[in-house]
Length: 241
Image 1 (cartoon, one colour):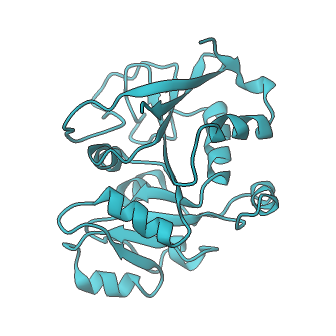
Image 2 (cartoon, rainbow, N blue to C red):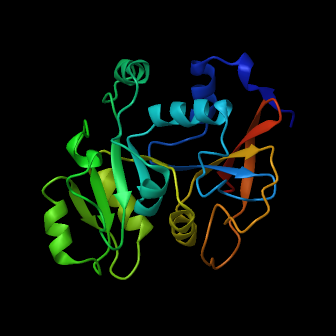
């Protein structure tokens, strides 16, 4: 398979490539990594991604009903409210979607500030996904600013989460990390698609991998396409059926 030049594709062509083969219920995961597998540079993943990664990153949000992110990644990467740009919002509206996807934050401890911009400036009421072990008082506090979903007792139950989101019209899930969340999703065999940007750098150091945790067995994938921008590769993998 030969890489296709990203610069030769307009936004609609890129979106069509990433929509191909997907279903109405779909869980897509997006990560960036160095050549040697580091998931961060100076502690954040955003520093690894260049213009090509950011372009696809932004476009993939247009396809999602909900953007799913672990609370630790929200804090580390400095996430704000899930507000898309005007062009993206108009494109979603033209496609029959709400202007902005729902922001879903996964947290076991519920160490989230209910008064933060994530909630107070959200264009759509966010969702907080947690487990039965989370503090009941924190669930009640966050329920004032978000819909709180308990999905699993001791650990995240990914199929239960997918069902709960789908019941709310949020069947197309776009996950942006982090590694522990991806590990949990893989453990439940809940990932339909992995979009991985390979940054042309060698990081060494002690940076982690894109997934953390244990699996009962390897999750086989098939390569759907490769896009190239200079020495950066953007890979799309689909679960091997």
